[in-house]
Length: 124
Image 1 (cartoon, rainbow, N blue to C red):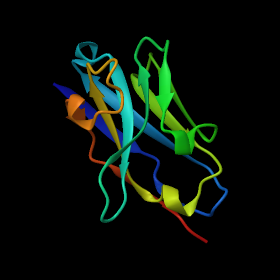
Image 2: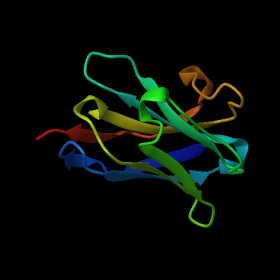
Image 3: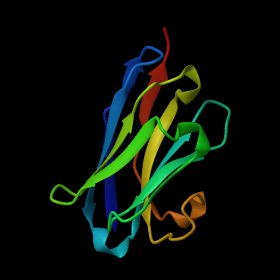
């Protein structure tokens, strides 16, 4: 089992920044990828980005490229999603997920473990 706990959500104005963290514990060696997904009200949960635990590859959805950055801290078993230049359309509950998914980074059902989610609201 892998346990995931997100933190760092909140309310931010358009153009602002937020940093989300996902702390992983348990059998993390059973997963090769950490991903971030988001779900806006009334919409499907969608892929945001992912990073391999090896750190050799990251992948992002087109709408966040250049604005969002995923990184990992091996010592703390933590993955961070740095979100800059936020837009109202980024408003959603953000979830981190873990699994052995390569190369199917964007496929939700490939991720075995999920955090509880954290709310991000971008509004003036």
